[in-house]
Image (cartoon, rainbow, N blue to C red; front, side):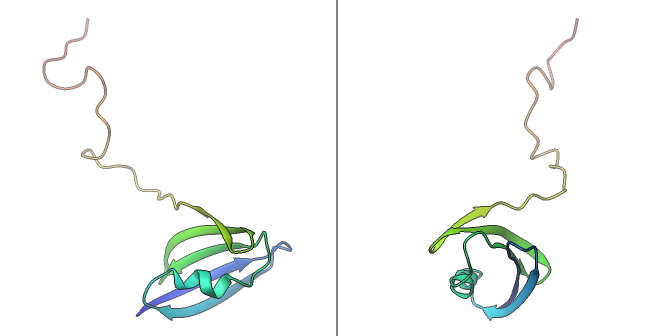
Length: 90
């Protein structure tokens, strides 16, 4: 079982932490199902942020991705047109 927690922020900007153990992070949806519309949730596994979610209606959630500050490695970076061996500049 994993160790998870959610930071729940209501419309008044009050924060509440909910800790739980589960086999997967999807358990967070069951725990948050009774929250009011508009509530924002940050879901963590340990100290690692997994997702940001906003409740937009009855059992409807908008899930945002989590951006990392890490720059892409050279292997991950897209190639620039005209770059590389055999290219010439005038």
